[in-house]
Length: 204
Image (cartoon, rainbow, N blue to C red):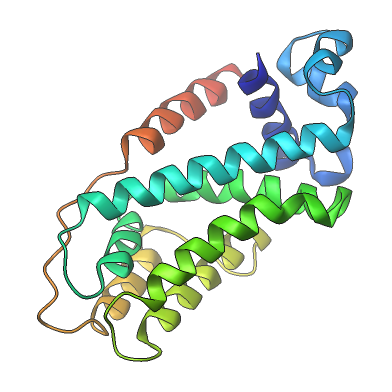
């Protein structure tokens, strides 16, 4: 039930914008009564908090899984996240989920974004200890942040060809001794969410 409501909240934000994220709209999107929604999320703050916490947990899980699928060596964290750019659909779905949660929190109550900030700090600290030359890991992370902003703000088109060009350019910054990432498909968690998203699209 909670995931159903949170899926509906994300769908409302993506389709109609944050200004239209209301408890009534989410209940209608989820196909539940407002009373049923309030049983799990008694306020808009609690609903947005639920969106952020779920997004942060999924993000952390995916990052750990990507990291573990990537061969050890210098740049392991960078290679793990760059590999995520190989699947355009899964990456774009992640953008929609993370932007829905982040922007909803910033509009509703900026303090609610803390779980996402902590997850990002964990990722950033791994880049700092990635065994790369000074500034390389940070540059790669900032470039990926830029792609995310381009996508979620609609500043410029982010599609498969562009993601491939950026990924290849960033991979050239890595030392030759770094082994090639073995993970060439999205994580199990990401793949599961991708299938669920496709089902939601067919219903809409």
